[in-house]
Image 1 (tube, rainbow, N blue to C red):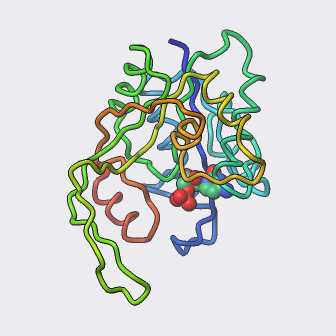
Image 2 (cartoon, rainbow, N blue to C red):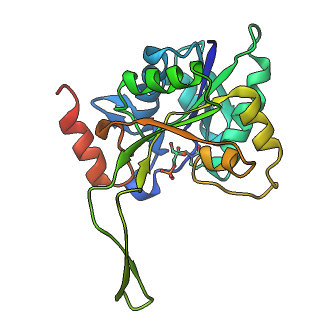
Length: 224
Ligand code: C5P
């Protein structure tokens, strides 16, 4: 299977309180985006396209290996992935049969998660997501913050990345999206056109770095 990776790295560092894009924030001295690219390559992806904030192309190119393709991202994650997908047509031969889309914000994702996603695609799945069970009780609240109900947690899963797709399936699903449509992940884009999404085991280390606490936890995990 020839798989290409997309890293969505065009987000801001706002919630991290950083004055640079989140994907350039260092973890153990290396930008988050470099960790994410390395995970994909170590797990079996052949090439990687990274969507970055348009104003920061030079800064990203300076920290990424030369064979990593850097493209301008968009205003939303959905727009960024769409831009990276468009750039994949320039990657030459062979045409990839699989695409794995990964968040730069998940720097410590173990390569074996990537390998599990690739294995499920090789087994014939058209869309694959790594997931973890819910440990907490989940409730519904009203506008005043009063609990109005509980959601049974047994069937709930937390969805991570990288998410893997048959390339033609993902390209067709993005082509079917309305221009302004916004999804928080890519599996929901393919589900919107009726494609079944299968799950494999994710990993706690693949947790997303969103706020300062997440970065502090990631720093503690490095080297463990
Ligand atoms: O904001 P959030 O943490 O949900 O973003 C998930 C991933 O999507 C991050 O790696 C971020 O860099 C990326 N992203 C993007 N383009 C945007 C917004 C977010 O590539 N416009």
